[in-house]
Amino acid sequence: MRIDILTLFPEMFDGVLNTSILGKAAEKGIVSFQVTNFRDYSESKHGTVDDTPYGGGGGMVLKPEPLFRAVEAIAGTDKPRVVLMCPQGKRYSQKIAEELAAERHLVFLCGHYEGYDERIREHLVTDEISIGDYVLTGGELAAMVVIDSIVRLQPGALGNQSSAVTDSFSTGLLEYPHYTRPAEFRGWRVPDILLSGHHANIERWRLKESLRRTLERRPELLEQLELTKTMQELLDEIRSEKA
Ligand code: ADE
Image (tube, rainbow, N blue to C red; front, side):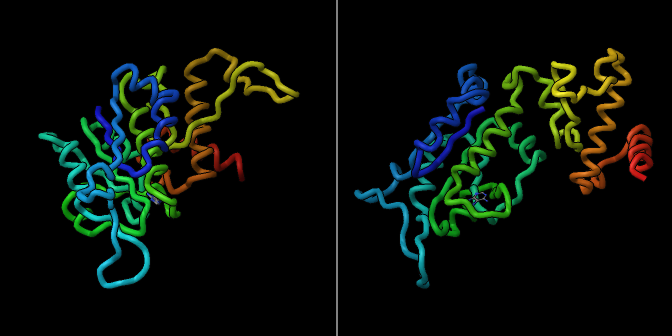
């Protein structure tokens, strides 16, 4: 997979793309990152990338030429998804992460200004994504969040491939509680069932605790799920324990 990032602040990405899972994925050739300063594609001597808005008012607007020229140079004969990071975009989710993770080439546009010329949205961008209902100073941090969640889904990116499969949200449920040694810490014991070695009982306990956590913290997620008979039974157990 190839990931291009267009930004006026390329240095923001140095640490994130070179560290831990993302850095290793790049080293292993699972993904290649290319960060481009789109000021280099400005048509003016001074590297101008923005201008005042037609119709007046405050703030600056990103001009179309540098971004169109940069994306066209990067895309070549590819037809990459071109993702604009902005608070007006579609709310990001694990489902969108899985969809983007299946692409071969993604281009992220990160702006720091008041706005983008609307022709960028209409004729250059294929997707607009927001990472939540709050406003950041720019799209860079949001792009890092999205890129991180996509790269960890690439086959071979995580040491233990099963960890992506049992993630919160991938299953539609929040993850069950995890424990490691010691079996007793400051008087707090690990649940006996996890020490029993009885795999079927452990699986059932984990599913039940996933359901409990989801019911307590994110009940709306359960409504979107087709419950199996076992899940229904476990939810009944949880509800009767509470009563
Ligand atoms: N740029 C500024 N705020 C943003 C957000 N919430 N999501 C994506 N990009 C942004």
